[in-house]
Length: 117
Image 1 (cartoon, rainbow, N blue to C red):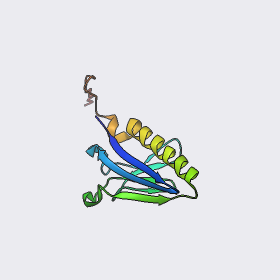
Image 2: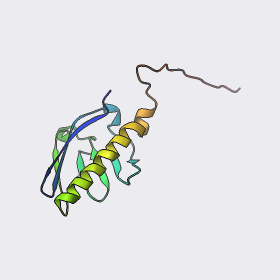
Image 3: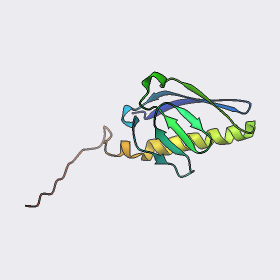
């Protein structure tokens, strides 16, 4: 199952970002900090903030298909930041807690409970 499908475009020093599809389990999920320092947050609507936060789809479904624009200092910086965003979202899709308790179709699901009276 795809956890997030997104598109980026660089036009000079502008990074454009839009989410095409996202697993609904992530909507409203907790803040996730990737190893490269970027945080992935489900809040209101998709946006990239250059101070270290990527906002994915949140409670405002009206804005799910927004295309966001982020101005960076140069074309090279836009490329570097895009790569950082891609790495953070890849790590988020592999490690975010909202996806951890769901087995894939090839895994068995076993529940173990311990009771003490």
